[in-house]
Length: 344
Image (cartoon, rainbow, N blue to C red; front, side):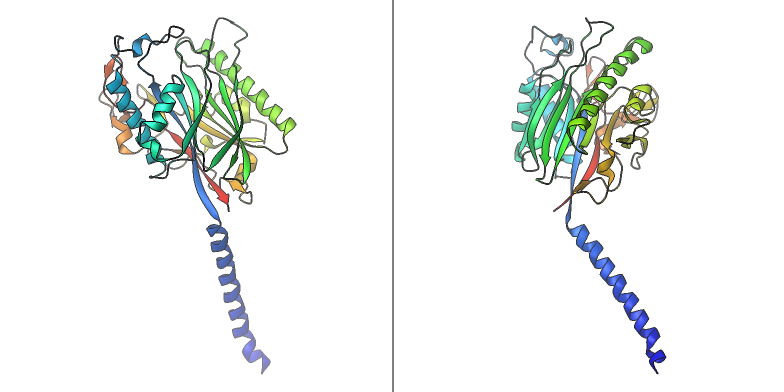
């Protein structure tokens, strides 16, 4: 007789186990909150005042590009639109920026644009770039607490007269759960001789690697996010130097999220992946207090950031200027972002 009830009992036990497992999954899911960390090359966010120590003449009211307060105001509004749109009206907790002229434009961005509705603050240092453009980081104070920050100089030992952007380092507490170490980069451009400019980017890569290695010496298992406009692609030597033959760092751009685009910037007919996010491998652990469960970086490409490419066909980023001609777009780069989940 006992055998008569054994099979239904087993089935009921299996159903109960499945329901319990599903309940545990839902419970874990309910304890996770999603935040975004983004990077955006905003393309020449200049003020309208002359800085005698920098080559900013083209972005002055009397300069070749006719930069004025109206155009600056429009640039602030469009930049804010992109940052807000990145989070679908819930902006990213952290946004790395490059091509920022100074602290003044950052202050305008968070106080004179729709970003004023959120508790944004910023970290910024002036760097020795000849045009005066810097990297910076926006963060929402309710999600991130800055513990330390510094600018890391990129010395080009083969030519001391050359200057480039510093690397911005920020250490902080993310959502009161764990410490994040962030490095924001804007490496030397490819303008000019490629072999020579690649030496500059390799120098930046070595300095970044040295600082990451130093971090591992003083911190136990640090959680690291490296982002920027590297002016090189994931498989170029300067990027491979950071993660190849080393399990500590992972370049998420080697496996980007599904996108209809092949890159974050377009030059002539070719798309390039210059804007990238690398992370420490421990952030890919789904059991961590903070993690990136989908292990991906995403290119943000809504239609309003793109325009028809009349010369090379297809589409291209809708930028602020086309040569010296003002067209009132957003940037020549598309933003990239990751989804970071935090256990409550």
